[in-house]
Structures are given as C-alpha cells and as structure tokens.
Length: 172
Image (cartoon, rainbow, N blue to C red; front, side):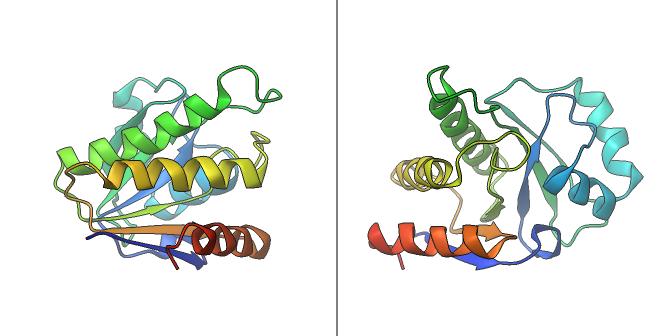
C-alpha cells in the first residue's frame, strides 16, 4: 500500500525517483519552484526541455534530474486561476493524474509534488490542496508502481493546510 506524507521543505533537495515541477507551457524555466528546479538541476535540464517542444496545460512530460538528488523531473503544467469556472479544477487534477501515469510508465516508486498552480498562477491554496489530495488518492486506487508520495510544501501555511486536509482524509 502506498504512503502519502506531507513535509515542509525544498523540493529540489528530495532524494526521490522524481520530483514534479510546477512548470509553464514552455518548460524552459520561470519563477518560483520552476526556477528553483531549473537552477538546481543545471543547464542540461533546459537543454533537454527544449527538445520536448513545450507542454499543454493539464499535461506533463518527464526529463532526467541531472544535478538534483531526484533521478527525474516530471514537468506538470497547471492552470492559471481565473475564478474557478473555466475548468481549472479539471486541469489541475489532470496534472496530478498525468504525473502519476508518467511515474508508473517509467516504473518510478517515489514521487514528490509541490503545490502546483498556487504561486504566481493564483490558484487558491485550499482548493488546490483538495484537488491534489483527492486526485492522488484516486490514482493510488489503480495499479501503479508508485509507493511513496510526498507533498513538499515550501511555506508553513501550505504545510499546515496539507497536514489538516490529509488528517481529515484519514491519511495522517
């Protein structure tokens, strides 16, 4: 049975099979967690990302981890929050589903997720946490190679929110 944990920390320091990047559609780096991952991985990451020719919102693509402790990076493109009536929840759930599918296709067993779309994309943190937890739980009900899920929260408020949501769902 898979385990789900929440930790407060830096996703670029996680020694897992893959970290998930809250990427933009270009996959060429940006601000927040995306920029931090690109800086920590080194220039080889942006070179490989150029070969992927971008990624659509709600989808994900995998690269090597290069200088990161993680073996791979799964770049998931979350939606920009536009009030919640333009399919944002479905697109965000799709990011988590696609990351899990890609992990399983590559026989990865441990995966670390950031709080996708909650930074500059403006997705409300509580709504994003609910989508993330619900989607991951649904994914773990299907056959998968993934045994360990980490929700890595950089900020204390997100960490407390995830702890509360996971506890309410009987997970921690």
